[in-house]
Image 1 (tube, one colour):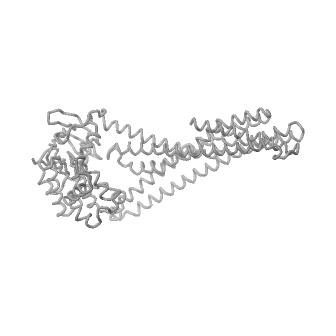
Image 2 (cartoon, rainbow, N blue to C red):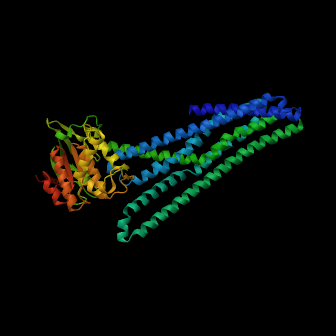
Image 3 (cartoon, rainbow, N blue to C red):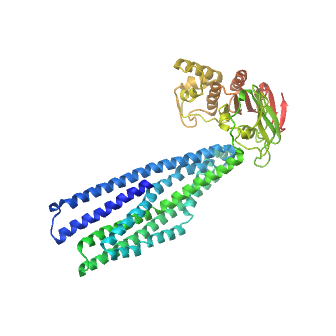
Length: 549
């Protein structure tokens, strides 16, 4: 902002210098018949002032765009990071709305930062200095300008009151449209199977029509506000011009101050006219900022409720730590799921969570990872030395660094398979090209990735964002290969065999046994008997207790 004010002062000085040079050249030419080449100094000063002002305008715009990019990037990063930190329950139903805000919504802030804010700074520098220069040359014209100037901010306030809430409603409509469209796309196969796709299409079409009407209303107000402010500024300049003309004809004013004031009068109103043109950008930008801070404040409150006390203690070594669930309950949509679950997940063993869909298996995993706060009960860590630590006193980042988590639909890519898997190599592994390739091939063979993906596509096949180009089962094999390479102390798998055939299920069973033999604790949610058979203990989530050990 200080830089913008300094550049505004430079522009003001250049504008006053330009008016002085034009008035001097014009009065010499009209009154004394002196041509510019006979007195080249004013012409040279005029050229220098114009070049300096052009450079100041360019630098203002360049720095404004850089500042806008940095500000939007920081806000976008903060919104995404805060939303991601809430876990699945905290951001449930808000993914599409947050995506709309973080992309198109925050882009509304760019014209606000590059257009409206710089023009406000110019209004605070160019307008007063130009008005002061006019008062030095002609007090009457300065009084006329002072009478018309207050009308512009008055009309801006009136227009702002009339359009209050319009930009916020437009942004809210856009976010709703994005959320509905994303939900429709995600559930389209189910809707088509049930014959309900047409109804959802009509809903999205209606939302699109509402968004179009809202956008057109905003554009109409933008046009009317610009027209009203432009009209006031034009009338102000016209009044000064008429006053100067009448006094020049009657001989009550000399030519030099008349030309200087006439040239400078436009500069008095120019910043305010440009503010008027950018006025609708200010409302859209402020609506986007308000929405972003609303998300940040909301997520901060939810995160504080979820995380409880500050996590200052580093997580213990999970390879030698038991995870104790004591009467764990989490409120679901219509009931507790899980309800009063008590069990201990012992290190170096395979623990299977059994239960029907909706009984709370994935919720239990989220609670163990610290992504959800228990409604009642507690999750604690018990080390080999008998020390007990409440999960809400542990630094989540230090705990997550020891966990490999494979959800039902793993996120893979973008990049080649080699680029995706090489970061999973252990720190003490042979990182030479041949050594790394051998480790990758061994892990790929263990998970069946070589037969199902590598032999077909090769190591250097480029995957799109989200693993585009691979099936769900193939993406699971990529994630399993990464988990095998990382050899984390705790490996959590959510329904790892849900998208696999019998042969692939047998491969998963062998892989889990390999992880257990390597010293990792394995927590898996399972329906199929093959996974339950290899588990050291089976926990029935619905019953809330260990049923097989």
